[in-house]
Length: 133
Image: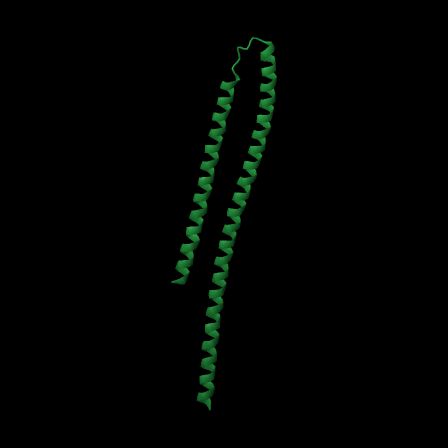
């Protein structure tokens, strides 16, 4: 009877140890999931910030274009009365060039953000694969 009780205690102990291992694995997976979730939140926040920044830049650009068009329209009215020596087309070409520079700058910032995101995602995947081993 003592041997039977001893065997039951040993089996109970092994079962509890297996449950503890399972709990540790589940907690580790939970931490990894929370880390990945935080990474996704960060990416979404970066995208949202970029979207808001671009919207604000577009709005400023539209306001500037409206102001420029109204001033160009006033200059055209004045040119009809004046000498007509001014050439507003050169000024518009210069502004268009500046707009292209801004677009290129936005694209490089976006590429940098994407690179950071990919690096963070790779780190998360490598951590997961190390845990599985």
